[in-house]
Amino acid sequence: MFLPQLLAKTAKGEKLVALTCYDASFARALARAGVDILLVGDSLGMTVQGHATTLAVSLEHMAYHTEAVARGVAQAGTGAFVMADLPFGSYQASPAQAFEAAARLMAAGANMVKLEGGAVMADTVSFLVKRGIPVCAHVGLLPQSVNLTGYRAQARDQTAAAQLLQDAKALETAGAQILLMESIPAALAAEVTRSLAIPTIGIGAGGDCSGQVLVLHDVLGLTEQPPRFAKNFMPGADGIEAGVRAYVEAVKAGRFPGAEHQF
Ligand SMILES: Nc1nc(=O)c2c([nH]1)NC[C@@H]1CN(c3ccc(C(=O)N[C@@H](CCC(=O)O)C(=O)O)cc3)CN21
Ligand SMILES: CC(C)C(=O)C(=O)O
Ligand SMILES: [Mg+2]
Image (cartoon, rainbow, N blue to C red):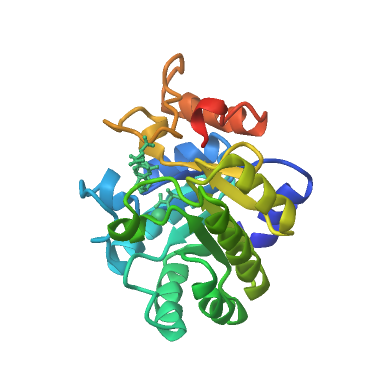
């Protein structure tokens, strides 16, 4: 699916549902369950590779999983949007470095790339978008900066909240077509969503974003110590596709996230 089709859904007021996905079999199941965006997340470093962080994931790893997911989506025949994370070290050095890495993921079958960072990444976002690559910018908790911040909720004081709002506006101005916000107060995510024209996708950012994303393994109940904002949708579901469909329906109906999943 191309970006205009995806944006048409949110323009109609429909909540966007995203879920991470790392292989062809799950891509088929998720596409059939009605997930709008399959995120080939660098969280695969944790969920698939078993690392404690996402930092060791390489561009070649990301390309390999993106190719598999793109094949699965094609097999499903239902049309889903494939977003792929630019991994740590593949884009921060310069816009030119980011373009080379992003082009590799687009050739692998991604429809959009995602990168972590605020206003500091605005020049890179603009460089990519002007050259034909849609960009989702990721703010708030940045897992690739875990050595600086730990896995803690972000923007919890007024100064940091004002900075995040400025970052969001700078990224939109630079041409980012989607903003992803991770682990920030729900009220701040709501304010950012109201302040931007582009859709927002939240994880641990409350229910007033334009859409939601979770990590597949958390939804399937496979994570030993899942983040507080995650939810296992398998209890009561008759199999994996049904569990994923329960997540899709809960987001579309505004039933997920609940108060217990936000800051
Ligand atoms: N399975 C999984 N789920 C995720 O949501 C996820 C990943 N992996 N890997 C990439 C990033 C890393 N993320 C994380 C990882 C851990 C916490 C976590 O343990 N949070 C604690 C609070 C920690 C603290 O405040 O010190 C929590 O209880 O939510 C949060 C987000 C989100 N992403
Ligand atoms: C947690 C989500 C947003 C992500 O970036 C990933 O799965 O890598
Ligand atoms: Mg990621």
